[in-house]
Length: 165
Image 1 (cartoon, one colour):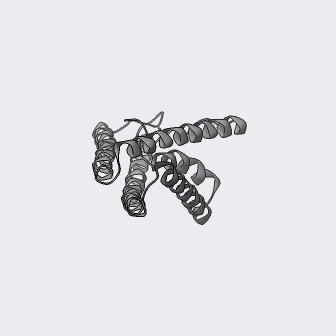
Image 2 (tube, rainbow, N blue to C red):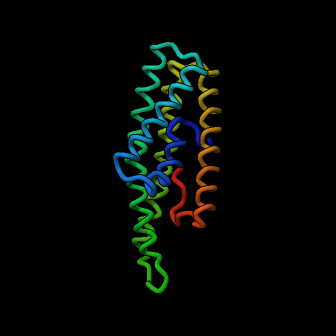
């Protein structure tokens, strides 16, 4: 499954926001984008007030877990990059542990996606879930294109850290 829940757009937007905006400004922008996305989805999918409340609860819990997982994964990537510095011998055991931890983090993200899907299926129709997938995919592509344009305009290259999935 490619970028499939409401948190995916924020995953791709967060590194750009982190680089451009310190703490409270970044958080306010993420909150505004999240709120706008959720309202657009609520209207498009025709969610009842009960569905919308349940959706917000699941999505918020998922987002918070994802943020923490991403923070930890970023630390792992930084540690791996430190191990792989040119001119320095990498510690094979450390590299192996870091790679295993990164793979485990990615597996946890997929499992969270599956758990979210199971939970959403308890109160959203298949059509509503499909609308969510489609709306998120469009938003993700727009965010990725915006990030690429900004990086090209700034003459910068992508971070050495791979995008968080």
